[in-house]
Amino acid sequence: MSLKRSDSMKLKKFFLGFMFILSVSHIANASQLDFSWNAPKTYVHNKGTAGEVTYIIWFYNLGNTIEKPILVPIEVLLTTDTGEKYPDAYYPEIMEHVAKLDEDYKEGKKYQYAAVAKGELAPKTTKHCVAMFEDVDPQAKRLDIFVTGISHFFFWRWRMVDYSYKITYEKEQDYWKLIEHGMTKDTSHRSYEFETRGW
Image 1 (cartoon, rainbow, N blue to C red):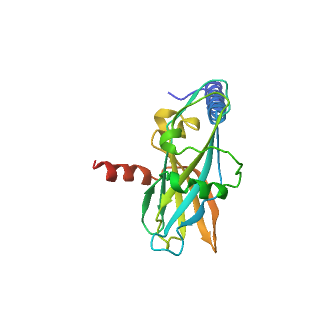
Image 2 (cartoon, rainbow, N blue to C red):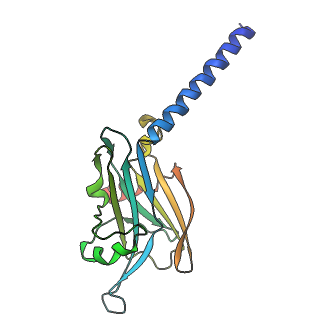
Image 3 (cartoon, rainbow, N blue to C red):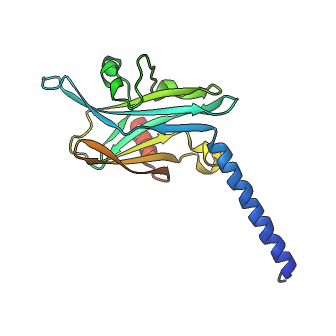
């Protein structure tokens, strides 16, 4: 049995109203977390010696914009166009040197890394974070940084639970140029978990 024209119009109005509600929810959820970052920097420790090590350093911020605590189970992974994968780490012995690479550096500024920063973020507070990737392939011309644990601020948990925020850079002479960023279905972060945990 076909629908009457009036019934069809009602369904259209209901659908449009439903989509509007979804869009408002999307904006409200995303506005709880202020996620910002700087371009990655290359740092060479013990340059010119037998102990020379090259790091990719990436600074980012996690800010709670509301009056209630929020949960941010963040993890960070870097992949290259050469097929390598690097979990983020923290090396306190080089922090004093790399801190000044932060575009927003201030004397006395404190930094955390994902393993410490993840979890509850107090109301109206910001965590300044750093990710260190050791011995990244010098032949790499493209970097993909995957940030997991923030998708629920953009989408419903049960629809996007394994999605990540992907930030892509390409090498231009002596710096990394931002190419694109946004939520992605790329599962590189999931495949890395399977590899490292032996699943």
